[in-house]
Amino acid sequence: MDALHSHTPGAPVLEGARVRLEPLARSHLDALVAAAGDSRESFPWSAVPLGVREMSEYVDTALAWQQAGTALPFATVRIADGSVIGSTRFFLIERWSWPVGHREAARSGADGCEIGYTWLAPAARRTAANSEAKLLMLTHAFESWGVQRVCLHTDVRNQRSREALARLGAKFEGVLRAHRLASDLTARDSARYSIIAAEWPQLKQRLQQRLCAPRG
Image 1 (cartoon, one colour):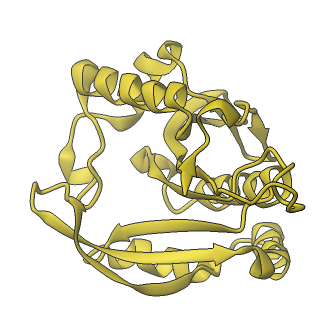
Image 2 (cartoon, rainbow, N blue to C red):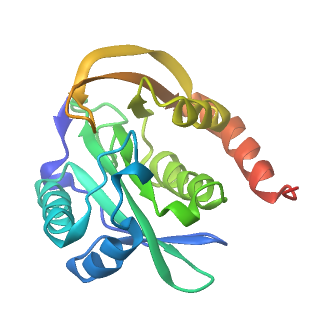
């Protein structure tokens, strides 16, 4: 599997009724610092950057990955007041090596990607912001790029995140042992989930219905 490199997808603005995903830029830095706050207790399972130095490194790394053609990072903006409430990104964007002459070879979009590095300001949690952001990103991945699958991972200990991925409709594939560096600086076991193209139409309908349902 090859990264896109010269086939890097464009950086779209993805807008819904509640949130807008803007291509991440250095101009978002101060707002991201404010959204993250100053307490690591707010993010027990996520390595969310706190303060100007950490957030600056976070943004610079995301933009470097975008330049390399392997990621598309976003700032998550609440439409109601225009405030930045977090960040998310496509990464590990892959273009498979289809044989010359295959019908997929002429397509310019990605074949697979992961959605992650997702965090929201504490006040934006337990709102529809994350669900709508996922709907926007999954729609773009499956319907604009034409991907075959989207993967998502979370710390195996993060039960709330695992339940959210299950509610989203992503399928649990198993646990990757010592997969990534955890927020507590241990070797993290990751729970792996995925959505494939054949599942997307039904999953999209469910997610749209959930977003339209009145909240009690």
